[in-house]
Amino acid sequence: MGPGLIRLSENLEVDPQGYEVRRGGRTVRLERIPMEILLLLLERRPELVTRDQIAEKIWGPEVFVDTGNSINAAMFKIRQALRDDPENPRFIRTITGKGYRFIGAPLELTAAPPIGEPAPQVAEPSLPAAERNQLRTGRWWVLIAGLVVLTATVGVLFRRSPSTAPPPEGRLMLAVLPFDNLTGDPGQDYFSDGFTEEMITRLGALEPRRLGVIARASVMAYKQSPAPLDRLARELGVHYVLEGSVRRDGQRVRVTAQLIHLEDQTHVWARQFDREAADVLNIQSDIARAIADEIELTLGASRASLERSPVFSARGYEAYDHYLRGRYFWNKRTEDGFRRAIEAFRQAIEANPEDARACAGLADTYALMGTWGFAPAEEVFPQARAAALKALDIDERLGAAHTSLALINEMYDLDWKTAEARFRRAIELEPNYATAHHWYAEYLGYLGRFDEAFAEINLARKLDPHSFIMATDHAYLLLYARRYDRAIEQFRAVLATHPYFGRAMGGLIGAYAYGGRFSEALAETQRWMQIDDRGPWPWAAAAHVYACRGDRARAQQALQKVEESCRRLEMDPDGLSVLTWIALGFKEEALAQMQKTCEQHPQALITLKVEPALDPLRDDPRFEELVRCAFGRAR
Image 1 (cartoon, one colour):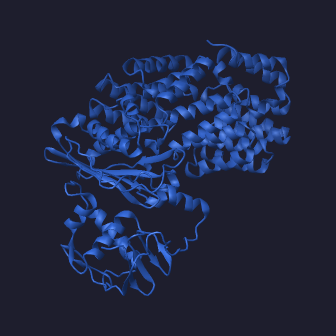
Image 2 (tube, rainbow, N blue to C red):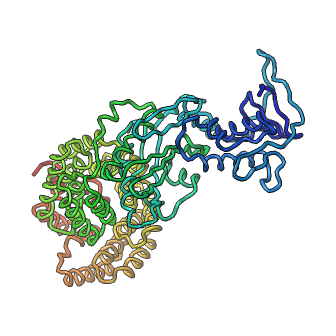
Image 3 (cartoon, rainbow, N blue to C red):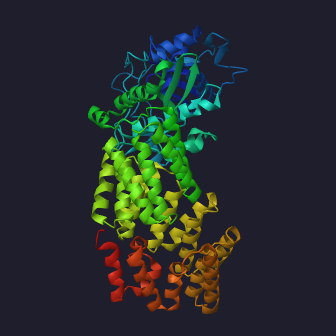
């Protein structure tokens, strides 16, 4: 077809040279594949163009990929742009089972402007400047047309289209959506879920400084409730998604995968993999490597970064299934969840003693049980250390294991210098490991290094946007930084989705109290009591609020309730009463209890530097001794 302007109606025209459709002088946005198909139909009008001819023209003659859905999607977009009704078409008729025919008769074919003469200017769509810039720079992953890569073991080809702009500045974000299990057997979900996890791990190590990959916990939220692509872009903050499916047929396994650019919802590439099922234990790792190779080429990532990435493929899917269940229960952050996680991780290690990830998961669980007071610290932290060291013996480059040890150094050893070195090493090895950024942010917050802490928690939440525990700890950082209004907003956002999460309830009550909003704080304590009518924690929160408000009588009554509840549970009430004592002015009693804590459980004092309730004690020399107890030595 020549380069002239094709007028399809009084106000509709196609400009092959400008590679665009215009209506009433305004550009109608049409992505690359739909535009190429439209130009092909116009070039061959009024002949029938078969679907095979379209596939060969767009994807190449040797392509081995299911293009049907892509063609259907492209035709839908073409009809939208032309405002063409498929039931009563003016321009394009579908020939069922064969292809398409352009039936519209163009009003005229206008010659292109001579070389050197500027083309008529068309008004740019009225968009905000930031959105226009995004439109100009967002297509850099679409590469040179006609480039075809042959993978011998897979036999799949793909095509990349011309790049229209240099790569955007900053870090791109990618989400690997849960791969669909198309076997028809729900019992095979472990295979598709495991493939999703393998892809996240592989791609997260590919080019971490340029490519961020959303954590598994956040993407698995879409397994049962798929979301439109535009919603994914908003909720996850990603530029691209990788989605696909797994099907097992006899002795063959077929995996399809496609990379989608969310700005214009175009397919950057799509591939299909067929393998023998006999080598099932290596399929995920091999295919993940092949797809990582493709994304390496698309990103322009260095080969060295891919070769340095750790290899995380489970030797047995029984072990891997146990590992996934362990992380599921671990993420619940409940005593029962931790105990079930320990059982699952132990089963994974029993099935595969060389499973470094399961060892790191076991270390994380023991460590958090000690941190959260679900088990004696001196009992569980040594077990956590043993599991983390075993993980590093298996794979010294496993960032999760370094993160586990860093938490142990911080929370049990009180060896802050070593802990920071290990956190930094973990992030160096796995920059896309959200938990490393999360726990390092907490570490920095305890030291009062809030600018660094907020930078790390923001990174963690960008990688795992649906993590309620990261959102909660972000709120605590805001509270410690005395940003009470922001902390309240964040705590309320957590409780909107997890209304019974006690840690967020306590934080919200504290933020209200420290901000002088006592009525709201007391309303939250009443709600907490309705949820937990036997535990001492809601009464301890109420006592503190009353004390901050100056209501000494009600504060004392609430403290009595704390003591009664602790007696039933065989707990020491004094630790829960310290903040109330300080607010009531009983500084000597508070300092005496804190000195006792320093001697027995100094780990409980790690918020000394930043806890707002302790501000009345900061000028006392004995308080400085307590700070040195928690931060000035290593055990």
